[in-house]
Image 1 (tube, rainbow, N blue to C red):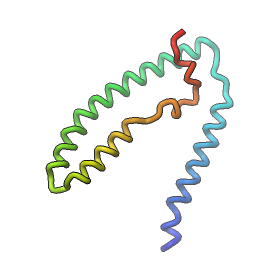
Image 2 (cartoon, rainbow, N blue to C red):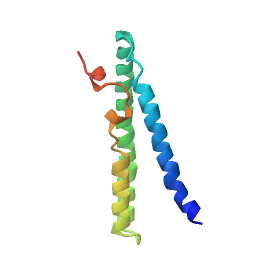
Image 3 (tube, helix red, strand yellow):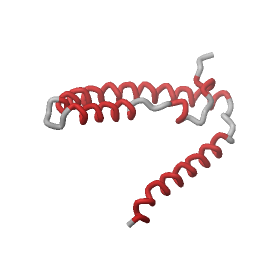
Image 4 (cartoon, rainbow, N blue to C red):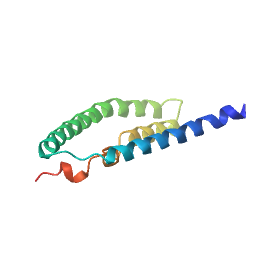
Length: 108
């Protein structure tokens, strides 16, 4: 039984090692020429517009659900847990997710 309990942290650690190896491999590639950087910037801008719209739609669902949980028998601690989880899920560090340098997306 104790072997099963130890399995998730081990698999999690292996996943982090794999993610780090992939990150290192990806950062070794060049950024490409000027045209490729322009295309990447346009894709990034479109993705950010989409994500902002997506989060607005999600908020229209999450806020009423938070209020329902808050005033239900589940209580304030469950509502607080829901809110914290939703906020953390909706606030990724986008610079950490991108293998491309941040300067690549700045307007010149």
